[in-house]
Length: 261
Image (cartoon, rainbow, N blue to C red; front, side, top):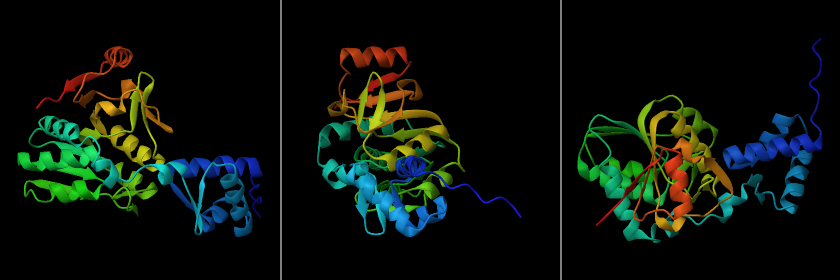
């Protein structure tokens, strides 16, 4: 007979549980009980204790990352800095060449970028987890749109989770166009752990990464670090970065393109 798998201590369970939550954004009690070989009552107590410490948000039958709960939905973000993001979108769309394969993550700016790209009427293949991106590009007969499977999150209008990340890894793209919640000389950050996992997967499967970000995100730090400055190839914004950030971008070899009316 094989040896019985040793059960994790509560401390180890909590550490692995938070790692799962950081990767997927949500967890279910039944899934945790099976993964850790404990009863559903034990999994529920683990979630309750972590919720009391403020590490997660309890939901019916499981839990969600606090960043997923606290981050403003895409509808609210769409109304902020709309003019600047429109300029960024048009400029970024001009960087796509006919025949490119691109990846586009969820976000208010990337959704505008998709609309600008559709208007260019170029032949392009797009992998995305964002429904507004897919809808915008689906109006162009020259665009092939591949939509990621996964758990649908209405506030972000996109699909997330392990299935979406694994799906992205099947493809190879020329360029990834991504958004983020903030950028400093220390790197790119965002509030949504699920979105960070998608973004990193797209970056890893693309030859170049172009970050689309308006000046309101300069020197902002959010919950999770997406990547270092050296991991992106270009930044498109409507305003020049402040001095320290500009120096960091230059040192990292990031090309900054300013969108103008």
